[in-house]
Image 1: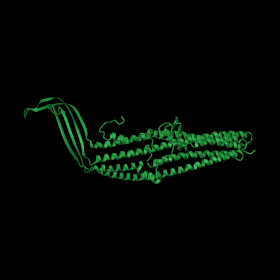
Image 2 (image 1 turned 45 degrees about the horizontal axis):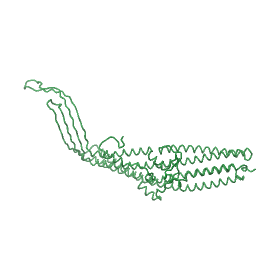
Image 3 (image 1 turned 60 degrees about the vertical axis):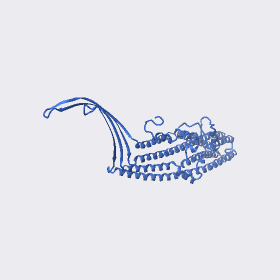
Image 4 (image 1 turned 135 degrees about the horizontal axis):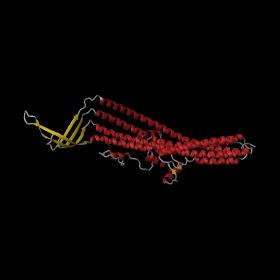
Length: 491
């Protein structure tokens, strides 16, 4: 009897079942182009199912790092109100109470001693108000205000950077979980088929159709399959934890396949670089940081100019601490004071030089940011092109592996192939399916990476259809506030 010829029908049925399961698991991601958008648009989703857009919305609303950056932006808004305080008067009030014992003596004659003429206790109360207005301080207030406004713009761009990073992390976490779930199903199906193959091989060994070597080969391949299954389970659990961390909610039971977002990106690398130079928040943040440093130089130079202030003072006093006859008195005054700095140890000059060096550093940081963004865009574009090519290669690999498995299976039925040949062909198909699933994940993530690299990954461009966070609202609420300790949200 030729080895492998005994009862190939059972083994063939196992292999056929495996091929069917592998095909379903492998096209899970690939089916996105045909199914995702209509399902999302209709809003018809099975219970426990989430789409990419829903995950991005949840991350945009729940991610703690993004919410923390929004709070930091709101805190930066207050710098403008602080700077505007230099234009406003400073008013202080004062009050005091005193109890005094007075004794007054007078001389009755040139040679006589002192005799007391008046003594007693007297109480006095004083209260007043002082207002100080800076009329000129070397343009420091105006420059500080413009510097604070530049800081606000910089903080908004930094917030946009965080938004992009959060959305990209959410898309990556979504696709990682989708990929690892598909691979887990592949490995689980592979183990099922290997277990059936081992049972059939043992049955054939018991009737003398195969040798002990064939049984050992099946056992070895099953042990390797279980090891791969455990690895896939570990990766799946890790991806679920990452999903929870980034998106802020527990992952659902099933994820709807996602589509690439190439339609939102420039058509070529030159267009991507041109858009990134004008829109990427890393570059615009660096531009505003240059403005902040430039205004700091002007603030430092303002310390060398004169300061003119106007002070008004009004005081009312009842009683007196110096005599017993005063009932009350009122005093008011207005004073203009001009202070001209001449020399104060050279600190102002050192501060000016230091500010100029910082300005030079910020300009170099801007050049660095431009180079970094250009490198990131080029790298992301290359990864996207490679992912597209990888899809075609892995699809061809899967098709060839399926043909090879069918051929080996047919040859095994007539005794021209061994059990090991069938197991190897089966493993090749599993590896090809895993490679295809991974390539499909890389294809989607690469499209989001390009969109982030050019500075266009935002809820508006993605069309998520949700109210977006508007930093201008808080800025307008606090910019011209003259007082109050409550934040606009009531805290």
